[in-house]
Length: 111
Image 1: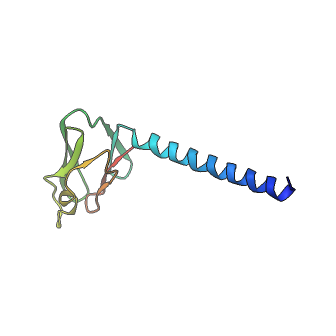
Image 2: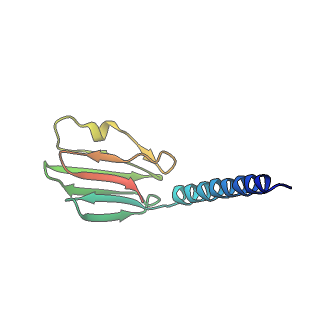
C-alpha cells in the first residue's frame, strides 16, 4: 500500500468513529428524564416528567403554571399578552422542544 492510501483509510476510520461518538452522545441526551424550569433568569427547578404535578411561578409579567402529566408538560394559565407559550401545547421527551415565555422570563426545557 502507498502512503496516501494508508492516510485515506485512517481518515475514513477516524470520520466513522467521530460519527459514532456523536450519535451516542445525542442518544444519551435524549434519554435524560429531567425537565428544567428556569425562572427569574437564574433560579432552576428540576422536575421529574413521570410524576404528575402543577407548578406555579411568579414571572416578570405575572403568574404562570407548568403542568406535568403522563410524561409530558405544558404551560397553562399564564398572564402574558399573546399566550404563545400555552399555544405550544404538550411537549414530551421525544419532542425536545423548549417552551419559552419571554414576557415572564421563564423557560421550560429538557435537561
